[in-house]
Length: 400
Image: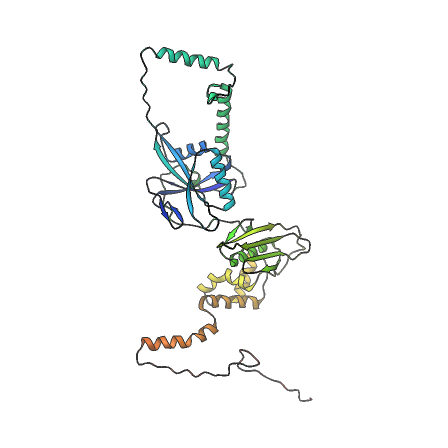
């Protein structure tokens, strides 16, 4: 989660909390996705005020309670609700959400303030006025006596709190940086009148653009490899694999003396991969490189899969041109051709698998069409010196 801006899913309205195999389910509530600028600098009170303004709640008659969604287990995702009641609770939640990559989810409940009706006894009005006047007049010279809530009667403390609240409101309403990307207007609007229910679920984002960060999580080792290659291509650096096992993956920079390293592992009781060590490059580029050792045909196949499947006549030279425009590297014709073949295998399967599936296909055809039969004539001798070659030409030197 970025410290400058956090995107929160805010659930509100009437509904029931459902408990399923993954913990709480808030799908019965209304949902709004809103951005909060610098949430770590907000107080819990300012958060509640912002929510009440957005939900158009009369602060004189109603109040809100806020709960967040957390996960207390490390081996599975079991979501629970935890109430927020103070600044300490709010900051602790933000720190844990940033560390464990939780989605930022808040459940807001509206409650009516209790009605207090106190009838004053005859003759008490003057006493109350005199006490209040005495408190205000004495407030200018009153010193703290370590009594609860006495700050409400000390002017300089009240002024200090008002100044802090004013500065915080100005900071939240001002632009955080001129270099930030444009934020859609509906993200920063406090108008909740055009809300839609978001029933989708998403895996928490683990990367900043192409950069891998420490603590990032991935579903499989293939996703880790793809992320490392994508990062190295964006940095225009090459890496080599030091260790690649069923539960451990470690790569380093090819330049001697460069500390760049990415180490990922899969815990014994975990169902995801986590990057535990990520260090930065200190090496310098010698110049513009025309090729990249980590730009493999499999990576290109994953990149070009959609384009080739949509157009099976996609030529290797078009693949070469696409890689040049996107990554600024030139690949060979053979690598582009190999990438296309991998895409076709990913989509339709290999020739060996199709050949091996012929007997089962014929058996199903006979089963679905009674009276049909088939006969396979296969060459028992399937081996040979030249594997997968039907014809081999041999030349003889006439002078020998």
